[in-house]
Image (cartoon, rainbow, N blue to C red; front, side, top):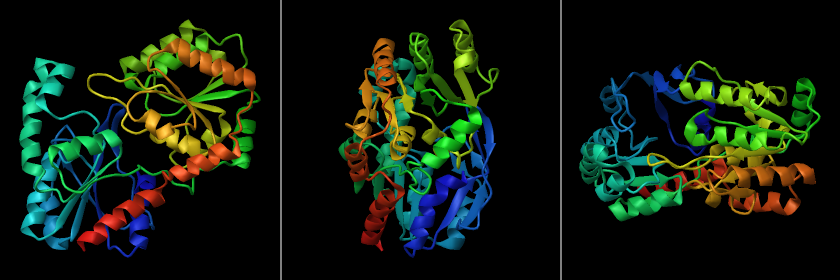
Length: 374
């Protein structure tokens, strides 16, 4: 997506000559999506076809030709180092006296024993393959940016070099408190009540089903639930969510919205409480929390589960409940609605600003490390 390339605009402004390799299409749970076209602010983009069905096995058709033609001094792979692509790029970089950096979202231990305890014997083959890839890539990767503290600890333990924690980075040009955007959206949607909002993927691990159950217990209060529009028939889980909404008779209290990437901040400003009720599983736990970070940047009250990195991300700037605990979530929301005070005080906004989770922080960490190599 074009908006997710803004970090590379900042790197370009630092004097780096940048070219991007982007998949022509990518397969998401909601279906196949085409890459957005290059904007006038983007560096040169090479749109290549992906081979493989898993981020750990992805390879690009024509990537070797691009590398041989451009001879980059630094290759930054926005993907895990435990992957075939990292191995391919690492071999190319060593041969051509270049440096390979990766960005990882990983927050589960990568040893075979931990994988077996979490996922059982059926996943032992994939765990063994990961070990083989790790042993080959850890000496090929020159630096690794981890978006959470667990990943940093994991990869340091695995023997990777130059492992640094880095924020995903919200864009302050879009995400900031804006009363005009708030008024505009609320007026257009006819909202004059407390707005509880959920932004993000409609998948089980994001916990939206728990939020709907919690809202059912708040039917005696005045509120509106804002959620991204989704297709009831695109997945069994989507259908489950629609069935829950109908079962609890919440239709009259729900507003479905369909903002694009550039409009999300306006809808966040229109909300009062933004909820991230993620649920950990044996395959996944919250790796960062892009929505909570963006919501806090907009001055919103965030309520989130304690899945993965969320407590460390939010710290004292929001409300944390034990994941899966519908009653705890419900009680937090009830108290917030009854208090009817949704303006973050100056101290909270100041504390969040000091956390420095913006793109500028992300850029600074990258530039400092790149400059050590060039």
